[in-house]
Image 1 (cartoon, rainbow, N blue to C red):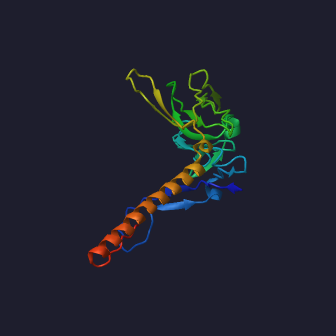
Image 2: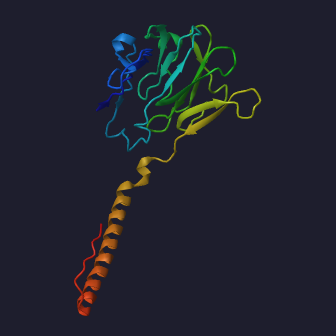
Image 3: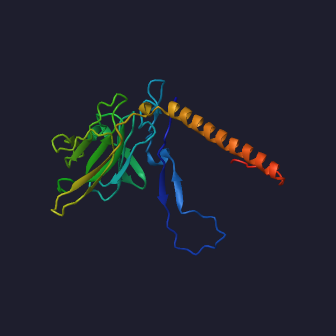
Amino acid sequence: MICKKSIYFFSIILSFQFVSCENNTTIFELLSSERTKIDFENNITYTNEFNIYTYRNFYNGGGVGLGDVNNDGLLDIYLTANQLPNSLYINKGNFVFENVTETAKLTGNKAWSTGVSMVDINSDGWLDIYVCNSGDVNGDNRQNEFFINNGDGTFSEKAEEMGLADSGLSTHAAFFDYDKDGDLDVYLLNNSFTEVSTFNFKKKNQETKETKKEVINYFEMIQENSLKSVKKLGFLEAKLVLV
């Protein structure tokens, strides 16, 4: 079965006119993919062997990064996918975009991309792109990628060279100058290495049911004995109700 997560583009319309409280005019407008040329879809396919139970990151989704990667004054969009190539859309103006992923060499070579961050890591005036990856169902091919902007419309992957090819089932990364030395540092958010299948939910659920049954039986016994005592004393019959 295939799940589709479509990307829609919203534009903000500013209005400098007085409107009454009864006016239903909205400030957002939904633009179709035919209008924006953004036809990206993060489609994921599950099978008996590959699903949320065998792979804990199955429904975590992809990532979206906004930044002016070609320094033309317009925000471009980089979208990551889980089972498909990532995509870079260059802003051509008037809410129209062009997919330049292939020529920019930005499809990504690792499995299950998640978060994306845009940052000028080498301070050369061009935004670079850091992509987090969570790997395949076997936990392989999950090193993060760092695409360095060459300033000519292309990028070069240099995560290993920069010491940032982390393989910790990453979800997202935040860049900031932690030690105030003028260089950007990074905080990396990783997922758990523990597989969902090892949690043994079925067994724990059965144990929970058995424990609940024992508790109910205990209180029912107390209720029965209490009612017997009440009757012996000649009081009105009372009943304990468990919720």
